[in-house]
Image 1 (cartoon, helix red, strand yellow):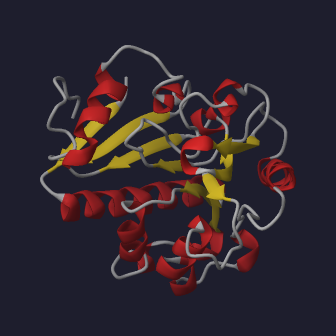
Image 2 (cartoon, rainbow, N blue to C red):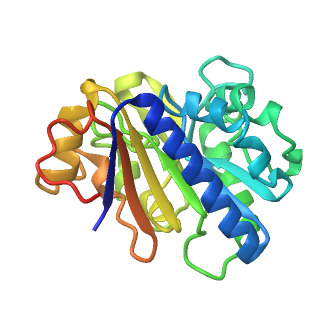
Image 3 (tube, rainbow, N blue to C red):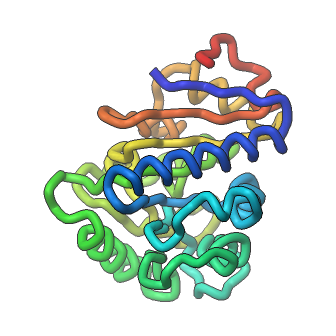
Length: 247
């Protein structure tokens, strides 16, 4: 069962998420010598990244042992304002001593299929082929108003992928090619953490968490870790329509 943590407001949510990141990083580095995290784009994660780049959080992470990837990317150049990589670089990566070789970006400037193939190859090199799907220590996700997460959008072919780690997907609703991690790879993470805030997310959160299982309509429902932990971190406004909470 997923854990659901509700915080009174957005600042409290972001502080708790930053603390969670630091804790998971410290545990992974102490246990295995490195910490691998796949980050999300969107409006909620950006201030989290800015917080992680500030004190006291930045000093609590051994960034030399951190590997950063992304859950998805728009097919745009890395300096495009729509790029998830660009947002993360400006908010976090440029401000902490993470080695360039530890930054594993999706090359959105390539053709969608080549970008997906190259990224899957890079992730397989990072994790090895010991398991069917690589296991990030942390998979950070957001939730769209239509129930999408990463670039797993309602009604798209990416939702049915069971073997690939990374796929290209043309998303009609945003008229853009995206490259996304697949649901099996996302679900293989040791820790899957959804962040959501604001009253605009209350309805879709209720449908995803408490509604009927219909992942073709609500792709976030596909994310079901078998061995890892699934956690929702929400502010009170986003959680307002939930009937049952596991805190």
